[in-house]
Length: 309
Image (cartoon, rainbow, N blue to C red):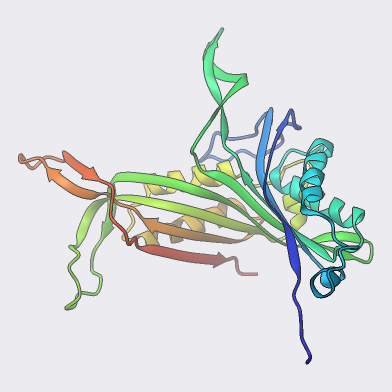
């Protein structure tokens, strides 16, 4: 019997907390955001490693582990590379990590490395000039987090990134007025009221790709797009823009992101409508309303926007 195999294995949820990584500097400012860099005193990420290659087939078919790198060894390798990394970004670390895996273990065909920020924010403390961020104390947040995924493969001269995806996950934005949803299809299944002005609460994940990975990995960071700037740009868009639907809103966000960052090739959105359910309205007709959390199911919206060549 002829068979074809696809082999991968690895280590997931490797949490790493490195002190005193290189500061992120050189980021170009944008009008919609105050973010221009970070100290990286605490460089904290959750990392996944997936290894691909036919060299590991014998471990499946014959129980021969002579080519297998133990996943516990992978975990230790991630931490050693976290110490050795001299850069300042999640994406740069993942590229460095993937390259070092391939250099160290020739039996690995290629690797996929993913990272997710572990959110720790500097606590605000008194200073000589009012309150400011502490350089030694951090609080664990439940905020949105930066994400990245890179595929690193071998080529004739070494290794290179063949696919990448950057992003920010877990945005939660509520706008109390200035959104609408009306003039949609009405038929025998429709019970939803039209709203020309409504609150809108969205859960939002955003992804983006660069036209050239050199812009992503440039050590000067002049063309690097921080997740914080994308977050702020989308928040400003939501604040300013009167949307007719979530579809209308994410389209506008996508247009503004691609206009602001010409180094990006695509931007994608995964959104959910999490608008709270009305419980009580004030009897005087004012805007005072009490809400509760919504019941599932939730409306979901997806969009990918590609820049024309």
